[in-house]
Image 1 (cartoon, helix red, strand yellow):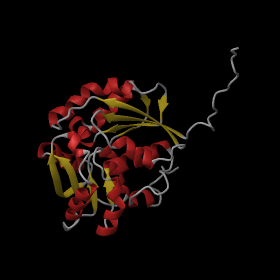
Image 2: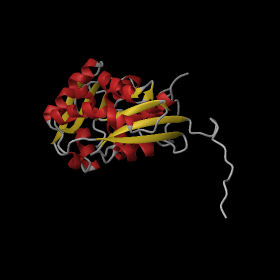
Image 3: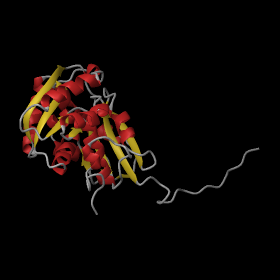
Length: 257
């Protein structure tokens, strides 16, 4: 015996509060896990697509993602998104945040595109920090241009430390203890008002609170900034216990009415 069962579609009240999209690099092993930690599961519908990216991180490989971005974005489920994030800090620097937004909005229906670079600048401004210590995992030709990109957004890089890594698979395996030690060294530079730990593939989530306690400085990572900006765009809160002063400062977790 077989029969059709009646059903109804979910009402707006039953659906998740925000519908978010995310473009993740093919080689990224960290971002998806971090974002699912940072949001309450029932608060959002998070749809993810992957974009081809090279195993070696060079300016040329990062810039090449520009051509692949529309097709990768178009693989997201159809419909309108409260916001779509592009999950590459250095890729945003090489391609340009405005160009990234144009390409994504040409391939999917959304009024808001979030990048780690612009999200970090907004987060640092919300924290009242304009002078940063910058930690990057990459070689100089990739990490140095980020200083200019931040300068264009009103953020001065007082000091920078890099791990000098060119292989993306190794970046995902840099030990949190090494990240913590490098960030502590950055914090010793006079005039640093906040620490920014760059790269969505850097496993820095677990050291944010410890670093803030040790250095007395706010700590922002690419993934934390991206989640924070997506939450504001979707008008939802991050999960209770999300790390960092950024998530606890009054008025910075949700978009103001």
